[in-house]
Image (tube, rainbow, N blue to C red; front, side, top):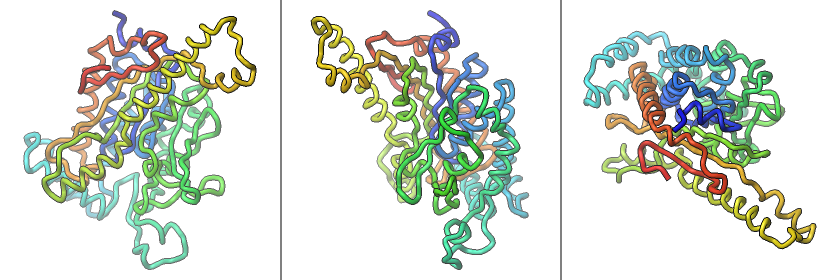
Length: 387
């Protein structure tokens, strides 16, 4: 059995696909850290919202600096931005000494979420000085509660956009066109990526303002699709691909018992983007492509009308996709505000969860072996039986 990095080198593309989820995004950093220490280097990063931010930091830095830059970003944005940050920082320090999954953890999480609402997060967003209901001019001040100028400055400090646009590592981020309602991917293989593209992918309304790009305005991609997996698998030319799909919301969950449970469950379902279903649909489509190729090979003399061959040609593909799926499992004390509870201790817990889940996945070298050519797509997940 080859080791995971040996198997990874056999694929034309190794992609890290990152879902949106706000403060939960540090889970993705733990996943990447384990990949890095395991010797696997993705050459395509795709993300939405906080996933786009993490993806930009990864694509915009040399491999040996990526984990360091991720830590710098998360240590920055997990501090409150306001003048009265000290009570929240003190509580965050105390949280490191609490037993896991206790009632005080829930209280600390609620406090950090309140801090984010009241003061914003350093290097990320700050509250506007006046309520947007006081304006009606279509400006950012009239259409959002927070200013994301600090995030733009943070991205410019931590991300080398010349590297993204020049060194061959691909970056794709999703956003929603406010005017048309259509989804759009900004892809470094097609166009030059700028800080505005990353800001647009994470511009969740009405919290954050729409971002203008080339005369169009964009909101968070998670409004339409929070998971960039289908874009990656449907991009042409198709290549043998190892996909590391990292989700922050679980589509599966328990029946709610309280109103807070209802709000959390609703958000889980909304932003999970039904990744499992999407994966199954893509897998069925790829198997159909493989089957068509086999069928054409069996046509006597391979003689079909030219117009029919032209219709079938885009569907012919014998590439294989191996999807290793990791999903953050919310802790028992986390509530519906878990995506904006930016406490430092909570961030470290998320990060550690991602690190452990990816290390466990790397402990299954069979997960990384390329599937048989005729199989098309396989998926693996340490939290369920591989298929």
